[in-house]
Amino acid sequence: EVQLQASGGGLVEAGGSLTLSCAASGFTFDDHAIAWFRRAPGKGREGVACITETDGSIFYGDSVKGRFTISRDDAKNAWYLQMNNLKPEDTAVYYCAGGRTTFSGTYPCLSSRVYEYDYWGQGTQVTVSS
Image (cartoon, rainbow, N blue to C red):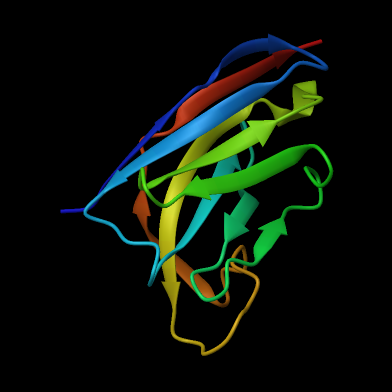
């Protein structure tokens, strides 16, 4: 059974930093892309960052480029999201997820046209005050 456990959310002032963690069990990086998504109040799901299973390529959503960094620790079966220079518009519930694609090769792993994310963590709240 696959289980993903997200943690690390909290309340931070604008300009501050947080690091989210996702601990995985029953899950391998060899055949799953790993990602962070978020959902802000009243908005749809937004892809934040991901790492492909093929060659470890990293992709970021436009709104977080240059501020957020995704990484993974194969030995711990975990991945992380380092968030710097946080803004009030980053306020959301953040979810870690694992997904697959039927395409061969390396594709943007935040694309819902290419990847289907079928494993999800429970979400962790990030609130950025102005």
